[in-house]
Image (tube, rainbow, N blue to C red; front, top):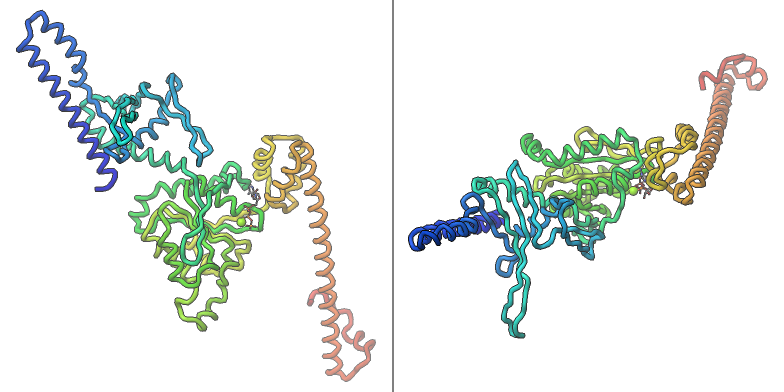
Length: 493
Ligand SMILES: Nc1ncnc2c1ncn2[C@@H]1O[C@H](COP(=O)(O)OP(=O)(O)OP(=O)(O)O)[C@@H](O)[C@H]1O
Ligand SMILES: [Mg+2]
């Protein structure tokens, strides 16, 4: 029996208990009717009605904190779920902070009632606590026993078991996933080994990139996580691949962190240099859990993808990590064992990648992380100085059209001063400097192109001279100049 069935079984037992309490109420009424004098009968009947009357229409379920010595999963799920139902009118709340999370958690206190409406039905929750004494070897010990009391109309008993409790279990799982600290796990040889907290603050909000591209990526991810049934129907592994390419400092690693933070997926950062065969690669990939993200950074440097064919002849097939090994993983052979996986490759040089990796259908989206444009700059200005507009923005926008500057360079400049004017002036200065440098480089390049052209021309003249010399037998330079006349060499160069 899985844990959810266990929880549902326990819930059914409690319902039975509640139903038997209702039966006791009926028995009590019978006793009153048959054995009490008539004047006392009406008095007692009112009290009993008050006490038990609600049971005819209302069920009560007790959800204790523990089941014997074991924690009760439904109690834990309910306390997480009910945190989201706290209303501003509640008078007593509890605040706590666990050491591993830098967050204060607010929960409701003993005796407070929470009303939750689910599919139009009202469910009333109350947390109850009672002190109990137990005998131990060291004498009497008092402990706090806690439970939730859940009241609802009896006609919704089935809805509660079939829909409401499963909803609470599901939601609590989601809330827990959103709360937990994310991890980056890296491999040592063929084992996922080293894990650290993902403390990267990057989110889509703080990511400087083209606004339209950002929107597309977020929509793509949101669609992906909702498509379990779709992937099942079309018979494809539930995974999605992204290739991030662009110069250093344009935010490829930041985007990876933003995706992990957005989906609440741990990052499995695969170091291909640590492994030496396709079977090791498979071992690692099969060892990844669902809802996780496989990252291979700088794929062009991690593995010499281009020279694989030559190497294949030298080594036995399973003696190396090959492109086809990686492609098998991309194509989903390994991922049939798991689901909801994201695969991300990054590279600074897309043109160095083997075309097999770039073929349509391999990586679902190729994302170019480019130089900083006006959209990106706005995000960075807001990140670092909380400003959305400034008189100098216009000049910066104009310069950004001409100058190639990475978001990393802009960030560095904006960080230089807390004074926004100084920081922005520093950025303008950097952009002017970069523009000047690029103009100088352009001139240099043009000069060297001219030189090359001139070299080419004079080489061609020399060749023609030699050719004419051999044809005509004339070796005098001047006469050859006369023979070739005024041909336009530059056009032929
Ligand atoms: N697009 C961006 N949005 C916000 N910050 C960015 C962006 N790009 C770079 N940065 C800043 O620059 C730092 C370095 O960026 P990041 O490591 O993401 O670049 P990268 O593209 O992965 O570079 P590399 O190719 O060298 O790995 C980040 O920590 C962040 O502060
Ligand atoms: Mg990087």
